[in-house]
Image (cartoon, helix red, strand yellow):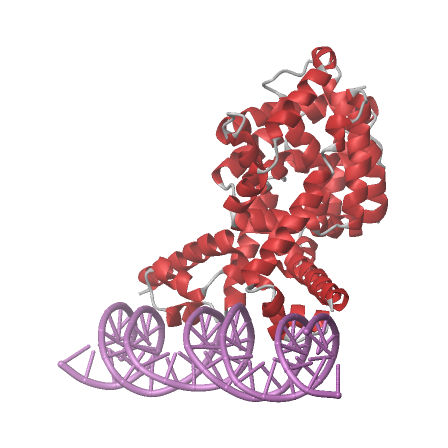
Length: 203
Length: 203
DNA sequence: ATATAATTTAACTAAATGGTCAAAATTATA
DNA sequence: TATAATTTTGACCATTTAGTTAAATTATAT
């Protein structure tokens, strides 16, 4: 039954995602994935031949989700400032719903740097890049953004969005003793980070 | 022989650090640590009873190193701006020498959030906090830093310093195709990040 | 209905892994 | 130098784990 089929495969994939994200590739157990999916362990191997296959499928999906969130920034017919606000709002909303993804990605990318290289080869970064540059030539002059500082700026923007979620456990440990709630903090962050960047690039 | 003793114990600890940082707790193998230390696996258990014991020792040391780098900021008789520059310069220099620590910490802290909570309980954060507040009351007014935004600001500073190293593999994959060298980037970053923050908090 | 194909399971295997132990080697001590 | 204490080792064990297999069950086509 193709319908039932799809159901089990999907259930396996969801369970695998949950376990891999929580425990990482090395910490994840095929048995745990099977249990969570409510199926036999052998069935995992029927749908995804090996742990590696299953993990790769999960990783690709997650990486794709993470990076997809960046792309609207490149098309949208918005000013640079609007794009920055839009990005933080969208990306942090996504991370609020998927708070463990940053930690997962950072872990796996460190464990196997080749994987992300291969993954990014399929994304035409140069193209997106050129789009962005041509869309904002005048603004970049205005904001004093040069080719030299673009990587610094881009990585700073990513840092401000992603880091709090990657290091969430540390921040929560600190916040706990200051009476700060992480949820509140991350909600505030959408605006704070956007303002922060915009002030930083305004001379 | 206490001297020789110290040597093997140290060698074990160094090897364990290297392997744990590279592979994480779950990915690390006691055999690999023993091999790297040039000793028998049984000897690991002679000095550190279990893998957990050994890992805890390594983790504590690394966490301590990471957070120690923050503390001079609290004593130094410097202006807020000087402290910011000082921090980025010092912390990024440390990370250049220990580029894998951020990824390691983020991974392990996500795997076991309790560990970092326990660790931070031994650091008198409230005290450091109060020191900082009292040292810079006027400047905080000048920069429009309120009690509300302090967590946002602090986490932003940490993010700008730590994130590029945690996500180094991703950045390198991107930079590779833009002809940018990570070493150069991280050297530039000390000044860029400091300027970035200072502009961001100046109205 | 029946044969064929696809899905699911229980039981099993081989390899890896953390940990143990008794003996050997080395070092300290009387 | 003899003896005791410590350090180091090789061989071993129990458990865990990814992966296999053959049989059973279910769905599909004729």
